Image 1: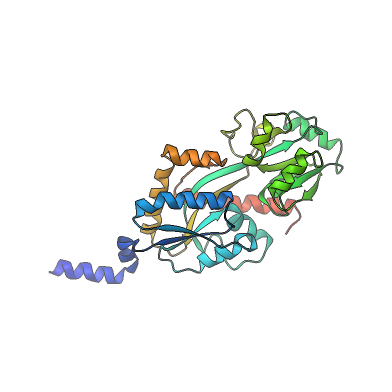
Image 2 (image 1 turned 135 degrees about the vertical axis):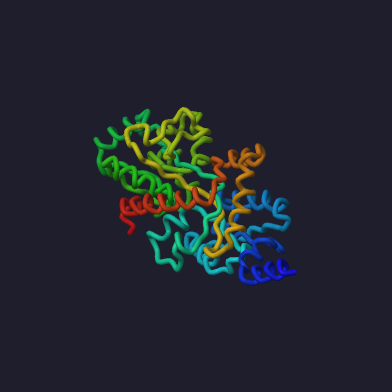
Length: 317
């Protein structure tokens, strides 16, 4: 009897413990910061599908776009930290947007990182108007024409735009951005020869890289992309330490019980050991990660610094 009294008292004194033990008792909502159909939405939904049978409750994606994802991020930051509201976060909301617009959340203080599901680097693709066969030849070509050449951008402040701006700054190059409303129009004009180059998502460039219309000169990740193993990274081609990539993962409000965070992280971690789940990621040009909360937190800290440098290079602060 004394032991029972002690247990009841401990549960009352530790509501987080009690919540974690019984969680989840109802549906879990995953807020997606972009409209349906993009990479972030796809990853959010396939991860929700994976989690639903393993948590024993529906995990439901809800799109809440606006303000480059800041609306969704603020909503989750202010939600009850009970494990029933999560954010399907992408790098822009937590590592880019804070540098370019006023926001009502702190990316490091207001969220508990759970797991990065997948990452995808960017690739520098050029049409035949650029004679370069690799990044070193590209740098030499542009240096001879400082300020005369342009590059396509999926929009001011997009991760591809900032990746190009960061690379140009580190290489000491000047090119003029041509801004489009999305990667589709940007890629179309590069293919048509109106703009020579574009730092875009792999899934935008890969379909055109085998027919000679687009030369992929470099990828921006820490290592070569499995989808383009023959293409060296920017770092391999004379720019050590260069790395940009976008990631998609799950975060929760900061005070969410640790046991809940670790439970979700374990279930996501198992996803990247499943061949069918990994294949779904590969089809949309995403490299599987399914890392730990600590790894996610470290990546966030590093990327906030990287994108701050890129935003400054693009003259957007």
